[in-house]
Image 1: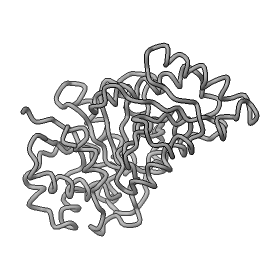
Image 2 (image 1 turned 180 degrees about the vertical axis):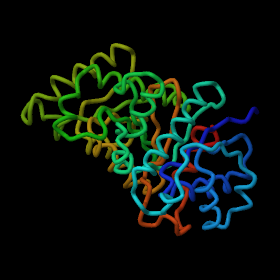
Image 3 (image 1 turned 120 degrees about the horizontal axis):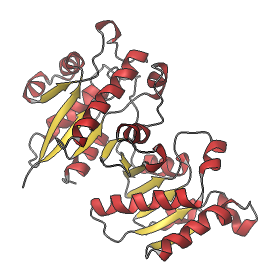
Image 4 (image 1 turned 60 degrees about the vertical axis):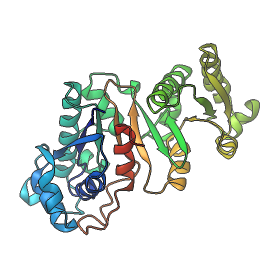
Amino acid sequence: MTPRRIALSVGDPNGIGPEIVLRALDALAAEPGLRVTVFGPPAVLERAAAVTGLARRLATLEVRPAGELPAHAQRPGEISAEAGASAVAAATAAIEACRRGEFDAVVAGPHHETAIARAGIPFSGYPSLLARVCGQPEDSVFLLLVGGGLRIVHVTLHESVPRALERIGPQRVVDATQAGVRACRLLGVQHPRIALFGINPHASEGGLFGPEDGERVVPAADRLRAQGLDVTGPLGADVLLADRRHDLYVAMLHDQGHIPVKLLAPQGASAISIGAEVLLASTGHGSAMDIAGRGSARPDALLRSLRLLGGLA
């Protein structure tokens, strides 16, 4: 079997990303079928190798310098504009290399949104960056969380609830669901059973709790069924999750999808950006600045992402 080629960026260089990159690749060393190139600042990786005791593993890795971080800004646990810019630059370099055909997919280490905002970079998660680098509208790329036996695609993501409600419409629900179906097929589920969460509690209870579901999600469900897809809903997220018989869930809002996955797979979920020409996965957790630089971070979520996109899961 030809090894899958993965471009792996380290995420925020002052977070746990560099440490879990080394720990994950050390764990994967005995598993065939995956070839990984690391994108990030070499000095940061050397520091992480010293903290984790993995200097010998680092010496065996292919590293492409990207997102260089000035020496004065190399401070584990510190949120800074320099570190935010470094994380975006490394991920961008990995995505661009994948677009050139050098890699099959990208895995990105955990970022810190405040650090990126301080750098003045427009950013609302890796889906928005992936869309921008690939020259696509940001609305064409969605987040799929995988963990705890669940796959949940998000119609809206990092934005206020009023702003999210403004953007939820039938076509966006259809687009997110179709992207989720394509991702399921890539992950081996050819005919996914799909569940649509309602916007309001009880999916508006037939209009009792508002018109939003009847106006926005019901028409989307009708369109998707007309395409031959197996769709349930919209129904209350609590009812659908309690049933647990679907392959793909479609969340209308950030917390609808993130809470169940993180409850069932704490620190172990994969976040996959879907809908672009490049497939990108990250961790379902953040950069954990409170423990960065201690060498104690676990690589579970990063390992899961690498195995998923490497076809080893």
